[in-house]
Amino acid sequence: MNPIQHYHQRYEEIKREKKVSSDLDRLTELIENDNAGLNNFFMAALGMSTLMLRMGAVIQMCRKFELLDEYGDALFTKNVLDNLRETLPSDTSWKNVWNISASEDHWRAPLIQSKGGHPLLDRFVTFRNKFVHQSIQLNEASLPQLSSSILLFEEMAQLSVLFEKGTLQLIEGKYHWVENKESICLFPYVQTGKEQDHPYIFQGLQKSKEKVAILNLIAGNEEAQEAKILERVFEPMRTSIQGGAGQVFDHSERIAYYQSCFVGRDREKNVILDFCSKSDHQNILCVKSPAGMGKGALIADVIQQLKANKSQVLYHFCGAGMQNSLHAALYHFILQGTRTAYWDRSEEPIDRKLTRLPSKYIDVIHLFQALLGEHLNIQKNNASGNVVIVIDGLDEAQVAYSQLKISDWFYTYNDKEEPEEDWRSASNIRWIFTYRCEDDGKESFYQFPKMKECAEIELLQPLKGLSAEAVDEAFKDFKVSTDFKNAVVERSKITQ
Image 1 (tube, helix red, strand yellow):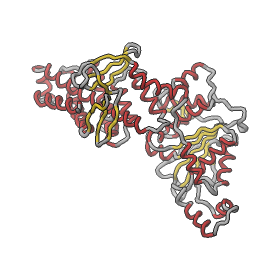
Image 2: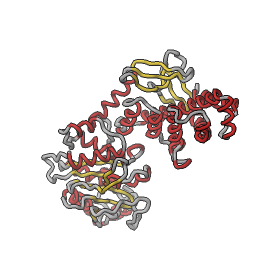
Image 3: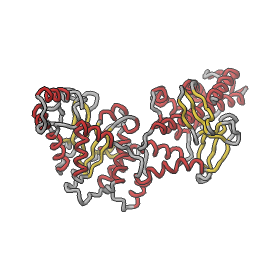
Image 4: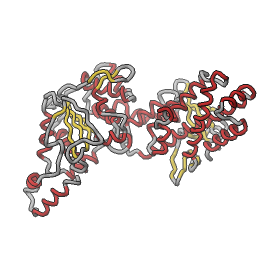
């Protein structure tokens, strides 16, 4: 069973039968002589497009949930809850779910700017909202918008190819999307209803979240059921991120791996630790090098040393998926700080924000700036009184999500989310960023913003391969040959 094909065929049949086109003369003729037929076409087009939007979002969301490891993805989980549980999902909400779930290029394509600089799904949602609220009607006054919408529906119809290879199958009482031998469980977002052989898709929560509305994908009728079936899914997700507990990014395995690679970097490590303990105004440190020089291993050892020294440290390693973004890094820092009691929650407004974390990027920046500036707990055993914030692989986040920049964090914003003034943290907040550069130290595809707060340390800018002296020191207590040590120096130029 493939409901998408059913809705797509109905759309194509009505379009052919009524000879619908974007031609203004033909549209005028239909408005005057067959308004009901034109209305049927728009209902079929909206039904097809809406179903593709919602089914696409559900399939990708459920696939992503299946791929998450035991630590989950706090930002992804939060966004799902905000869009599907906290409000009655609109088409904008489903578009947001599509956006946060899409990973493959062909699924991301409808979200990428195209006609007039506006993505396809944005243009569809905008038109649907105007049509439903009757600011666009089937009359001659709306002819330009109606003509444009017919071209829009042609674009939406092309999305049917995304679903051609898959089918909905009922397996052990739950609907699965089966495609290329992959079976993705869609329960409870697609489930059975009164018509047992018909799939129903989740529409939203109603009556103070006591009821769930589900839509029959074959007959088109809506039913209501008790909300308990959805709460069994949503409640563990909500609890897992309540107040920062549970699902945060875990980097313990990466740190353990990096530490197994760490050798001969004591000079560099001590320089960074010295920077972490200072209180001068140059509180931003960039550690850069060509790929493979051991930035990750060096920073992992610094983090472990800071933790051993009872220093307060927040850290994030950019990697695959959602964690490879500055939005996710900010979110992770806030959750890390919540779990380790770095934030003073005595004031009700800040406690409320930490209990119900914001999702929008700018709102998360505002919250993090406020936490560092006004609500920071310096713990008694923290000898330096500093908090160290570390991001490893900043260039990876920049390449993956180029619209987000680290400079975003160092501005204040107005109500229109436009940058107003520079924002700088107190000198006891020590920032460390690692990223790649060229062999000569020049930054190529990624440019770190120039700020007077950036410390200049020649040993780290750029970080070079292991020196012979460092290798001699590292192996002084072992009987190893000169050839072996030379091999370590040579290998350090391209690995770690």
